[in-house]
Image 1: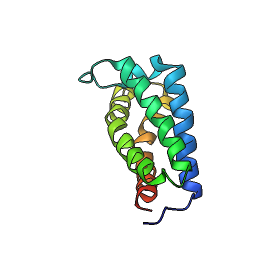
Image 2 (image 1 turned 30 degrees about the horizontal axis):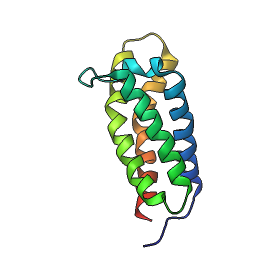
Image 3 (image 1 turned 180 degrees about the vertical axis):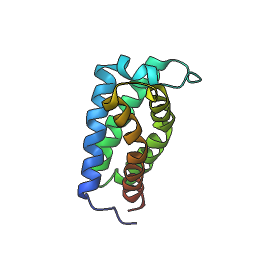
Image 4 (image 1 turned 90 degrees about the vertical axis):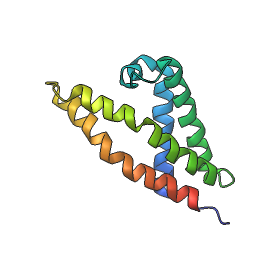
Length: 123
């Protein structure tokens, strides 16, 4: 099986994961409110997702780990999608237009990110 080339979209996904992962670790309190209530240990889940994002970021950049990192990235993006839905739902009645726009814009923007992760996984 061949490894997918390191394309611009894979580099971008890796960069997004680096930024997001670092923020999850540096400021977990920002992310804790969007963790769905049925998920226990919000802080630990936020920290673990930050570590997972950083691991995916690094894995996507290296040819030997790109395939597995692609699958892991797609799984991670699907796993955090409920938090994105919760965030959009939480701000839907807010007067903060920028926050509302960002929260709702994240939902469809996940799709090209998942597509990129799957492209990396499939080689």
